[in-house]
Amino acid sequence: MKDSVVKTFGILTSGGDAPGLNAAIRGVCRTALIQYGMQIVGIHNGYRGLVQGDAEVLHSSDFSGILTRGGTILGTSRDKPFKNPVPDPETGQLPIDAIKENYKKWNLDALVVLGGNGTHTTASMLVKEGLNIIGLPKTIDNDIVDTDITFGFHTALDVATEAIDRIHTTAHSHSRVMVIEVMGHKAGWLGLYSGVAGGGDVILIPEIPYDIDSVAGKVVQRRDAGKQFSIVVVAEGALSREEALLDKKEFKKRRIAMPYSIAYRVAHELESATGLESRVTVLGYLQRGGTPSPYDRVLATQYGIAAADFLARGDFGKMVALQQGKIVGVSLEQIAGKVKNIAIDHPMLLAGRSLGTCFGD
Image (cartoon, rainbow, N blue to C red; front, side):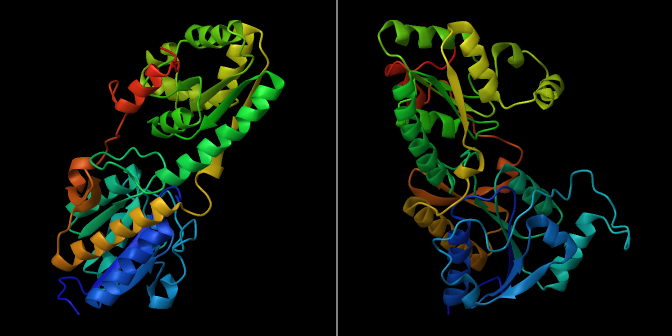
C-alpha cells in the first residue's frame, strides 16, 4: 500500500444525473482502496444525505460492475445547504452545522463531490467552513470553467446528434421545418456541437440572442434554393434579442410564464413568418440517461483516479480538471459561481459560420 494522508473519505453525487457518474465513483473508490487502503463512506442523495446523515460504508462489491451503468448508485438531489437555510424542526440545527457534525461523526478526513456548477459552488463554501474537499466535473452542459471537458458531455452529444440524424429523414420526407430542443440552460455547448455534427441549418444558443427574421430568412433562402426542409437546433436557454435586453428578474419571470418550452415558440414564430409547416422535438432527459460512451467512461475513470491521488497527498480544495490533455487541479474558489460560455471566436462557432449555419444574429 502507498502512503496516504487520508484514511477515510466520503463521496457524494449532486445535481442532475449524467453518464459517467458511476465510472467516476468506481475510479475513485477502486484506486483509493487498492492503492491506498482508504475507507470509503458513500453518502446518499447528494448534499441532502450529508445534512440528514444518510450514508453507508462502501466495500469493493458496491462499486463492482458499475462502469457501464448510467445514473448514480449513490443517488442525487439538487439540495443547496447554503441557499435559504432552514433549521431542522426537531433539532434546530442549520444545514451547515449538521454537515459538520456528520463529517466528524463519520471520521472523515475529506469529502469527494461529483457535480456541476452548483455542486462546486457549495463545495467551495464548505472549504471555507473547514472541510477538506475534492471535486470532479460532471455535467452534460460542459459549462464548468477551467476544464476543457466535463464527463457526461460526450454521451449527451452522441445522443443529441443521433436524434438530429433521425429527424433529418422525417424532415426531408415531409418537407418540414424541424425544431429540435437540446439541453443547455446557460451555455450552448451541446447545441453547438450536436448542431454542427448533425448538419443543423440553424443553431440557436444562449450566447447569441436571435432575431427571428434572420432565422426565417435562412429557412426561406433554403426553400427558394429548392431545399424543402430545414433543421433548427435550439438550446433550452436560447433567447431573443428582445429578451437579452431584459434584466435577470424580468427575463426569469417571462420564461416561467411561458406555457411551453423555447423550441415551441421558435417553431410558432417560424411558421408564422414563413408559412412552412414546423414540428418540434424536445429531447429532454433522453440526453442525460443511459449507458455512458466509451469516451466518458475513460474520462470519468481518469478523473476518479486523479481524485484518489489528490486525497492521498492531501491536495484539498481543488477540482480535478483536464487542460490541454493533462489532468490538473484547479481551486474550487476560482471556479465557484462561474459558467463557461462559448466565446464569439470559438473555433467550432467559426466552423459553423464557414459552413453557412445561421446562428440567428
